[in-house]
Image 1 (cartoon, rainbow, N blue to C red):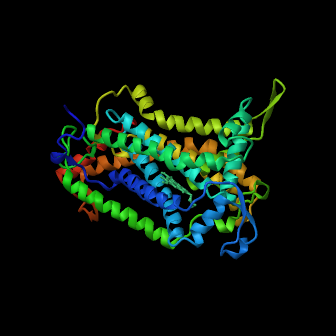
Image 2 (tube, rainbow, N blue to C red):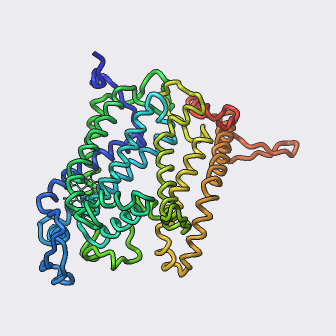
Image 3 (cartoon, rainbow, N blue to C red):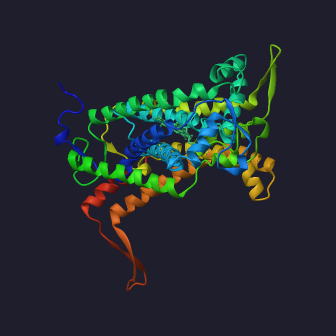
Length: 460
Ligand code: HEM
C-alpha cells in the first residue's frame, strides 16, 4: 500500500531557507506546549476574588482574581516562573509570525496550486486556530489588557443584530464578564492545542503524500526533486528546533512581555488608551476604529454599521485568503499539477493581489495604533483616522498597480540580462564617437533561471 511515509529513507527534500517557516511554526508550538504544561502546575483558572498580599508592593491590598493572583505568583514567586510565562508568550508570537510568513511564501511562489490546495487550507486553519489559542491564552491572567480585549469582543458580539446578546451570553457563560476564564481554560489547554496537533499531522501527511515543491534551478524539473536525503534534512531540522528553542529562551530571558503587574486587575471601567490587542489581532481593532458610525433602525431595533461593517470586511478578507487557490484555479482554468515554485515577478497579477492584500491588512493594523501615533506625533486622532480611511480605499488598488508595474519592469530587466549579459560598468568610446557599454555574458544556468521572465511580459 502506498502510504505517505513509505520510502522515507530514500526520499530527497529541497533545501531553501524559505521552506523552513512551517518547521519554525511547529517547533514554536512544541516550546509552547512544554512551557504551557509547567504553567498549568501553578495557574488557577478562577475569577473568585482574593486580596493580593504577594511581594509586588504596588498591588498589595488590591482585590484581584485568583487567576491574576496565581499569574503574579508565577511571575514573582515561582522559581523560573517568569521565564516560563515569557517563553510561552514569545513562542506564541514566533509561531504566529512563522505561520503568516509560511502563508505569504506559499502565496507569492504559487506553492498552493494543485496538488497542494488542501495544504493551503490546513495552514490557513493553523493560523486561525493559533490566533484563537493566543486570544484565549492572553485572557487567562485576567489583567487589565486581557479584560479590555474581552470587553471589545463582548461589544462586537452584542452589536450583531437580533442574536447579539445571546451570542455574548453563550461565549461568556452568562452576562459579561461571566466566568469566562473557567470556560476558556479547557479550550486553551486541551481543545485548541489538540486541534493544532491534528492540523500539524494533516500538514505533515499532505507534505509527504506529494513530491515536495522546489524552486527552479540546476537540473530541477517538474518531475524530479533536487535536494538533500531525508536523514540529512532530519538532522538539520533537529538543529532548527534547538535554534528556535534557544532564540525563544534568550528572548524570554532578556525581553519583558505582557507585564501584567503593571496593568493591574481587569476592570472595563478603567480602560486606558494605548492598551490594545496583540499585533496579529490588531487589524480587527483597526477595522473597528475606521468604520463610520452609521446606525439604522430596523423593526424598532437599532442596527449599527460601526461594528457590523468591519466584522463583515475582515471576515470577507479572511474568507478570500482561504479560498484563493480555488478562485485562481477557476479564473485561470489551470488544473495541472505543479511541482516547481514560481518567482513572484513571473506572475505580476498574483503578486499585485498579494501586495494589495498586505496593504489592506497593514492599513487596518496601523489604524489600531492611531491614538498612540496621535500622542507621539502631536496630531489630531480624527485627522489620522480620516487619513487611514482614505488609505484603506485607495491603498490596495494603488499597491496592485504599482506592484504589477514593478514585476513587469523586473521581467524586462531579466530578459535584457538573459539576452545581453550583465552590465559591468565599462563604457567604451568608439572611433566614430559613439559609446557602447560592455556586458559580461551569463552562464547557461543563470539564463535558464531568468528564462521565465525572458518571455514577452504577458501580465499573467
Ligand atoms: C498554540 C497553542 C497555545 C498558544 C498560542 C498559547 C498562548 C498563550 C498566551 C499568549 C498566554 C498568555 C501568557 C502571559 O501570561 O503572558 C497563555 C497563557 C497560558 N497558557 Fe497557553 N498557549 C497555547 C497552548 C497552551 C497549552 C498546550 C497549555 C498547557 C498545557 C497552556 C497553558 C497556559 C496557561 C496555564 C496559561 C496562563 C498562565 C499565564 O498567563 O502566565 N497553553 N497561553
